[in-house]
Length: 125
Image 1: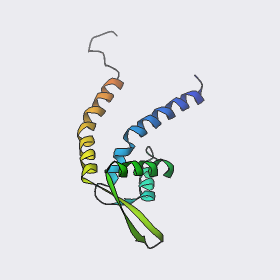
Image 2: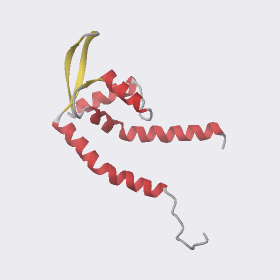
Image 3: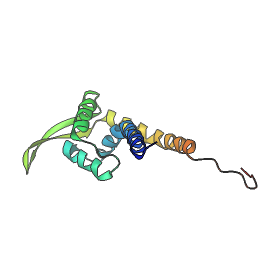
Image 4: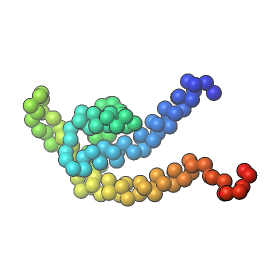
């Protein structure tokens, strides 16, 4: 396998992992206060691993709104046009709480599969 093929496979794995958790990370960013879309994009970019584009975040926010996990309000901005702020609904908070509850066991199970077994002491393996 060439270095380019290896990098492409790693990138695909990262994309799939990001897709699986992005919704809950966005909800978590709104746990303590409402946020506007570009603010969410910047927070995800700062993480490095979860960096994504507005073209991904805004459709996700629309879906979260349709699913009644977030609500929106318009607020004036001191640096431009009004901004749409997103905040958790009770349903969004419940979804985040449930994800927070199941994530550790899920993460630990995946880690257990990915960690090679160690040979018992004295085993010539």
